[in-house]
Amino acid sequence: MIRIFLIGLIAVAGALWAPVSLNAHELKTALSTVLFNARTGNIEIVHRFNIHDAEHAVREVFGKGADIISSAETQDTFANYVVERFSLLRDNGDPVGLEYLGFEIEGKFFWVYQEAPSFEAPQLIMANNALREIWPDQINTVNIEGRGDIQTLTFSGNTEYLSVDFN
Image (cartoon, rainbow, N blue to C red; front, side, top):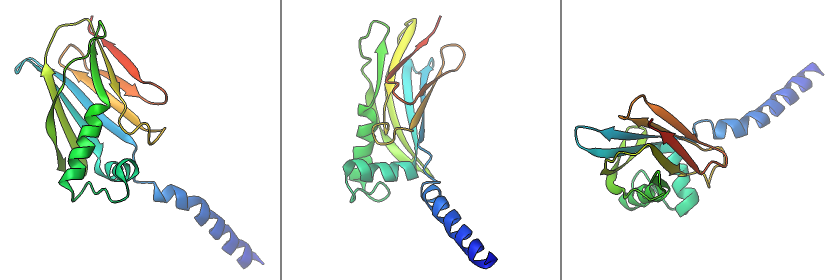
C-alpha cells in the first residue's frame, strides 16, 4: 500500500514539475542600454536577448521553420522586429530617428544595435515592447547611461511608454 502511494506521489510530482522544467530556461527578459556617449556625440542603443528566448520567439512570430541559430534571414528579421518595437521620443513627443546598425550572436545572447545623434532634453520617453505580445510575463529592462546617474526603466504588464527625467 505504501509502495502504491509513493509511486502515485512520484507520478503526481512529475506531472506538476514537467511544465516548469520545459520552460525553465526561458528567461523572458531582455536588457537594453541607452548610452549618451559624449565621446561620439551619439545615443547608442544596445538590446540583448537570451538566444533561447529569441529561438522560441521567432518560431512563435515567424513560423515553425524560423531558425535564429542557422538562418541569416531569420536573424535579420528578428533584429528588425526588435527595432520596430523600440522607440525613443523627445519630451515634446517627436520621435527620435534611430538608425539600425545591425545585430550579432555572441555566446548565449542575440544583440541588436541602433544609434541616433545625441541631443539635450529634460526628459526622454520610450517604448520597448519586443516579445511582450507573445509572452505577457516578458520583462524588458532599459538602463539609461551617460546623463548623470544610471536610470532604469522596466517594461512589464501593460506598460507601453515610460519616461526618464534628466533634471
